[in-house]
Amino acid sequence: QVQLVESGGGLVQAGGSLRLSCAASGSIFSTSAMSWYRQVPGKQREFVAQITSGGKTHYVDSLKGRFTISRDNAKNTVYLQMNSLKPEDTAVYYCAALRPTGYTDWGQGTQVTVSS
Image (cartoon, rainbow, N blue to C red; front, side, top):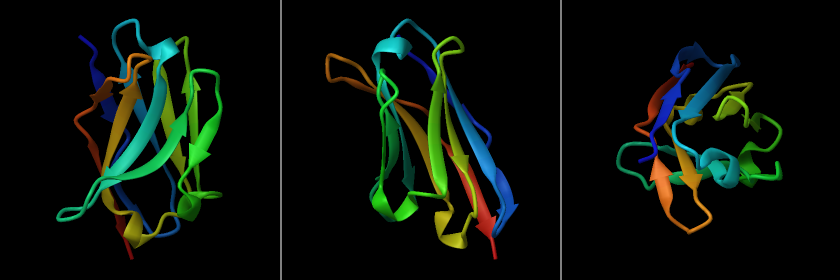
């Protein structure tokens, strides 16, 4: 069974930065595309960014230039660097691992709150 554990969330002022981490247990990390999603209460979970097993990155257009996804396969960890944060970035951020089989594992989420 795979476990994904997010960390790094918290309260930050607008314009500040946070780096989220997602540590994966199990052997699937290196072969999985890793993604970050976020969700605001009452709204659908939305895609933020993805990094493939080969290191190719994809972002939602609205966040390009402010958010950066990266991975360290030696540490089984994926990161999301978030800069120039805005109050509308407030959400629960989830890590997801898309296995080659198509199955997706999810973390429990970490709260990010950006104050104005």
